[in-house]
Length: 273
Ligand code: GTP
Ligand code: MG
Image (cartoon, rainbow, N blue to C red; front, side, top):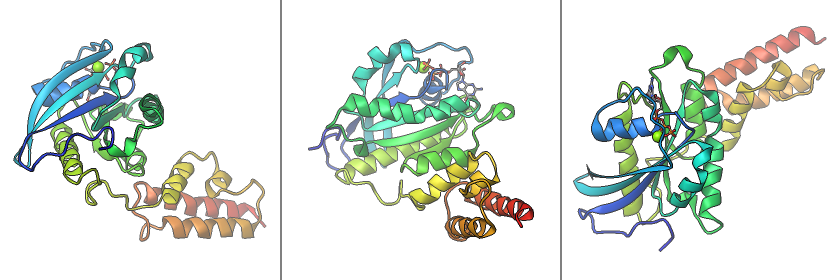
């Protein structure tokens, strides 16, 4: 049996799984867990010291699931404490705060920390990840929009949910889908069920949408050098238009990226003889 996989059990029998939370300090990891397990919200920030541990029992498709939840501290200071807890995990709740861009940008480094701690024989493909775009109640300060978060998550085959631990929005749905995906994965003998986390767009499409969102001007958006010729602009435009046309591309943010490319071409051609 591969490391990280729980024992396969007969359908209907209870299953024991380990779940961890990951993400920067103060993004709301503990509050999400508290909201689900205790149905309450604590507005005061009580930083997790190292790690908090809890056990809960849930029922998924008539099956009893015993969940061991390890709620990690996000502060770098606690790295030495939490690094012990990455192994033998079946599910990860990866959280960022939609009003803190750096917490979104830190998601890759959280995956890198986990990968490093699991070592060369660790297999992250055995783990179900769910991404929580948390604090969606903070609408005024939101700076990471849904399509950007969804694109990051779904291009990696992760689940994605918009959540608020404060109002409870999205929390039950997230846990239900997350636990169901873990159970399906275990019952499939470690094969990802096609329906749950299938990716319906290509990496090239996702990479281009991300690049277009972060581009600094119209040249950059089309991926051509400043001063490029009409032909070069049109060629780059045609390639991106085919790749990102909303009829062909279902990746989150593709429609906006397509419009941005059309506008960039129009703006550039106005000034090129
Ligand atoms: P560490 O344990 O330090 O890693 O932080 P954490 O990610 O566990 O954050 P925690 O759950 O303690 O929440 C941090 C702060 O954000 C607290 O003041 C919470 O009340 C607040 N908070 C958490 N979730 C939400 C939310 O959905 N909306 C709003 N408005 N505040 C939230
Ligand atoms: Mg915490």
